[in-house]
Length: 543
Image 1: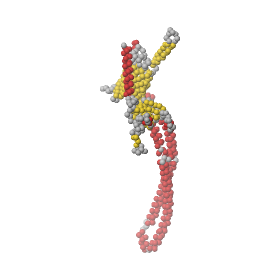
Image 2: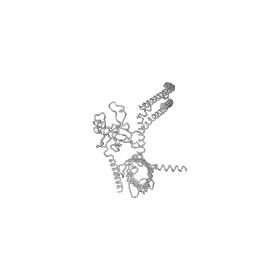
Image 3: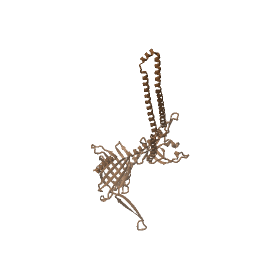
Image 4: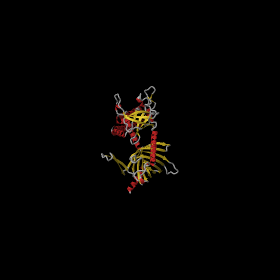
């Protein structure tokens, strides 16, 4: 009676978990593919990281998934250079009612550091500018309609692929020699023509300044000479002229002769100075013309400096390089890490079980779980030996099964995906992969709690089914965890619930109860611990 009751419980539990997982994934994938959607495709030169069921998004919302990948066969007509390259044809199942036009663009983007990719679609617009058309715009066709008649109605022609680490390194190698040559050319230019031009301008300005100063001295001398000529007493000369006109005319003639002798040398000096000033101005004009010629060539993009200031190729390469490096570093910084340490005391077996776990959170709704387990039950392996005989007194065949138990560590590697998030509080997460060195699945429920005291923070329920070969029934483990203080959890539960223990409760398998404690640390906590621990070690070493 007890055996039938246990079998009935196992069957009902398995059916309930299977139905929960089935309807959960049906809820997540609802409306993506099937008869209510439509299919489109795009041609990629590199489909690395894209797999069936890879998500497709528009503005961050899931609108489709990848359903097929294959090599695009070459065209029947003579191919062009672009068509001659081998390309991958990726088919996408779109959700019904999703608007998609012929000018749509599809982007291949990186989702995490672990190499996962997804597709982002810009759906396009019903109309787009067309300067050659009579109305200045053209009408775009909707994609996904009439694919049998016009196959191009199902192709997204604008494809933008993600930049890989190899592309970043290649662009760095291509850009560094160009920057080095530019720096060498600029150094030679600053020590050559520009330096000579600056020296010539400085020399011309110095010469012109000296000539102008000399000219001003001569003008001052001329002014003094004229003042000396007109500085006498004209009243006495007038009176003498009235008394004796002839004497006045003779005096005037002698005075004019004396003035001519003084003015002639001064005028000659002024003329010579003006000639020198004209020569200096001509030299300055030629220098300015050379500078204007150089600036015109630089403006027109001639020479190394002209290409550096006017060619957009170098600026675009540098900008693309910094963008790629920023995207690459951004994918690294988005990866969150959660480390956990847990010890469980098994009541019936009177033993201690220890877990070390690392949770890599690539996105808020997806993470990878890695565990290293020290299980007192050990790691079990079995070996079957089949024996055949011709002796009629013995069975024709016989088999022997040898079970070996070792104390080596067990490990887990599981992919987790959030299935539901109710009211932003309760989260239901499914896990699938390797659980304690065997295949298994798990289901987690997280429920934040709010009590009068601020000691309690989060309550979690975890269930795992794994190890389908060791015992009669698979191993079912139920765990409840309560975070009563930051980073500190109290855990308890039931292990191997379906299988009973041997007589007297002995054996290395079977139902057992446990309780324990768990510590968790995230990236910020680890940085703080490393800073405090490093300071303590440094202080101890200095003492």
